[in-house]
Length: 116
Length: 109
Image (cartoon, rainbow over all chains, first blue to last red; front, side, top):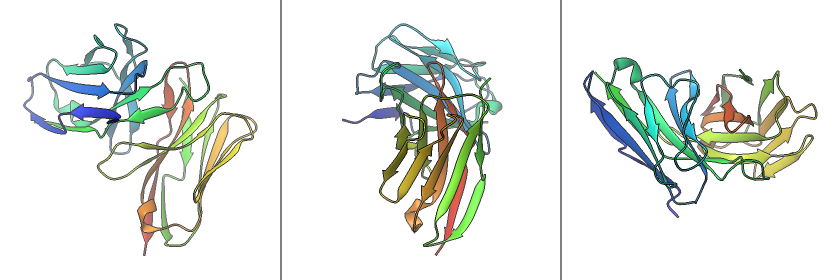
């Protein structure tokens, strides 16, 4: 199993450009998450999904959109990138909720995004 | 919203020393998780705790789920250079985890 994979690993954008980050998991997990990590800020939740076709806002959703068309994929889109979106983005997946051992989240390796 | 207070924010220790860090919350959590993040990598799950009072070990790591369900502790014994990184606690909220701010561990050889 590859676990959670993210593409691309690095990206540099100019202000106003758009891009999509792809997260894929091969563990048949129901829940998927997008976080951003900035120095001294820990992990902040952007959007999440508790199943195929469903999405919900997290702590810092503004400027981002997501889609979960297939259970194994979770896409994060930036429609018009801003310098404030320079960050490291992590995707995570979780089996589900409600059952023992279901709350463990597994993270991808991250995407380092710079917006100039 | 729910918040976790993780302390200390950073630690500078000598190789071989034991390490202790903790997380506290004003809310009750039913699950506590501890993660480690190496530089340039994603967080990796170290230990998961599911019962109040539970004490769980993973090699030189030991974590405890506080009896009040509002805190958790992580201890690392006999630290080695590969223990360097950022350690995060997380509590299980509704459909998502609440993360602490992290403890950055630096080890002097």
